[in-house]
Length: 372
Image (cartoon, rainbow, N blue to C red; front, side, top):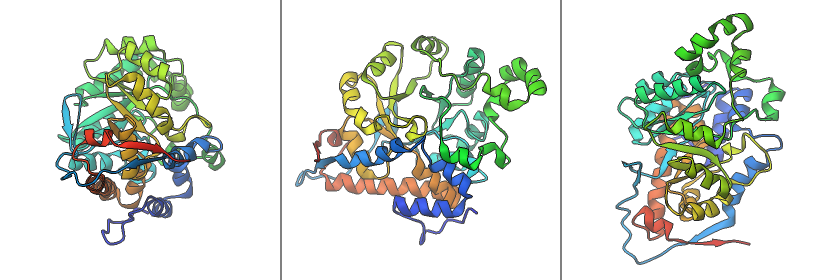
């Protein structure tokens, strides 16, 4: 059961936060948010790979931490730390994404709403109020449905599209062993897709005849999505399109060639494919070939401000924080989410002082050493 926020007992370390979250939700729900694909090698290596790197702090440079902010697509934010898109958040808290979106607005941090959120595009926008929000889009096999979701996000005041391209049916052993689906816990499945007028018009009869789950599975996900599809999608929106799921330098260049306005170096937090390269290991070479022509984000494995510093020094412009804030949601709802980000902000501010960095650009100039 979700507890009320208590400043005196709220966990500071990731390990204690994870343990407390596990105590607050069902074992099946915790496995769903914590687990990775297959043997979970990728899940583990995402975190472990950060220990390969260390930076050299600078001293006696008059660091005042007077500018921890970052500008992305013409908008300024207080820290280079954003919400990673995570769906089905009602499995850990009855308010789900609404609580997280409200916390993001208070933090002045972009909230990235997933296509498979447990609330609709419009409901999350209402919860965000005047806060910044981006929409994470999964392309369906039906282009008209995909474009309708995109247009709804535009109309609801989302200011960027995060197009995730590494989505397919994963092999998460814990979920299969538990026979667990988020929708088995009273959630309405895929509310943004189900409520879409184009989906209703084209597939309403099929839902009545065959059922909702098989109908949605007939068009979602879409592992056949191509670079040409990206170029076509770019034609129907004026919003920046950030391509999420890039791990290869050639893919990074292909994404840019076909219109990407930003990239997220990510392996989906280890949830999609096992045995692939950790995101932080893929970052330096991708940053080199991109050569600052568009923003680069790092997703997967971020657990502390130390990890954020390493990501920025290796070429990221900002990072996406995922599991830590979901654990905060499980522990104390909106206040738990807020506290997780606030703790990361405070740790980040102190590290700026200790490392002799006044700006994000100073962090990017830190010398990184690869440890044996």
